Length: 190
Image (cartoon, rainbow, N blue to C red; front, side):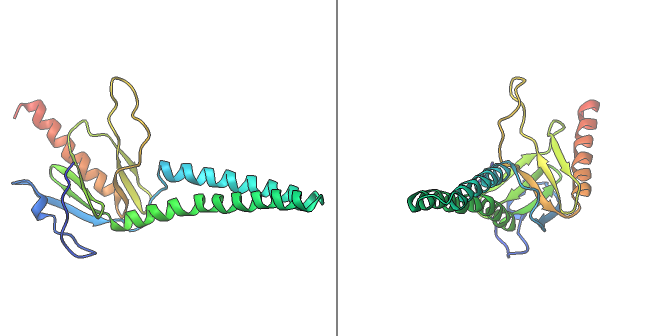
């Protein structure tokens, strides 16, 4: 993984300074949509839903119990606080993901996948053993799957790769083509 800044305008980027000698730029793009919610966003959304629904129970008990004012104020206060925290947990992580994807720029070369998130560059060498998950819907995604270590699945993490792009199936086909050419070279010994 490299830590370089990427020049260029908001819509375009100058990838030429980051390419290795002889490396060709095949495609460049950016996220056109929000993409699918990744694992951390889904977790916080689920937690926010649980808190919001739980808060409704506290509010229901507070206002239907018709008990003493302290009881109503206590349960009502807990309910309102839980509702606010639940709504924040539901809304903010998705907004942060959308803002992060707006900053991302993507490039595909004949050797690597490059992702620049506005501050750092991530690069994956395209090898025959690079595992990808393709979400072909529009906007789609080409996700780099983390490798398994010692027959153990990888720990859950934030999805990485080309997220929320147009033509994800076409980009995935280009990557598979690069991988198949590398496999052919390996088998022929060149």
